[in-house]
Picture 1: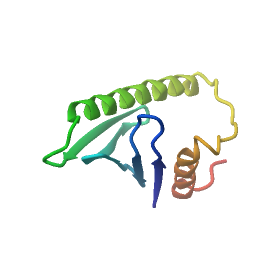
Picture 2: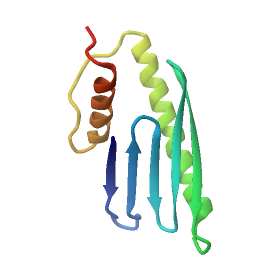
Picture 3: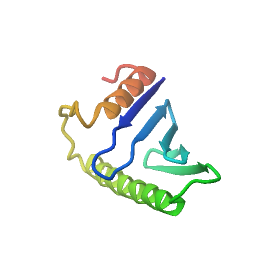
Length: 120
């Protein structure tokens, strides 16, 4: 099971391809290389994220790519921690997915439902 998300370039940005493989692997393709991501669940409220980067010998901007990747991962972690605090506090209510921005999240939740089965 997998999901692929492509991002065409805008202005001075770079084309990107992002893939997710159920349940805990992902990859990011960027000019001059790619990264593999692994999430290692450590309990109901903690996971470790491991990045491995692979670059062509002539790749440029490696430091910028790694820095950007780490910044996005840090932002995502803070967002997940905030959501988890709200879940733990009982402040969650169901809602609709944004078809433009949250399709990968919808796919992921569908895979979880399929793996776990009905919840009463």
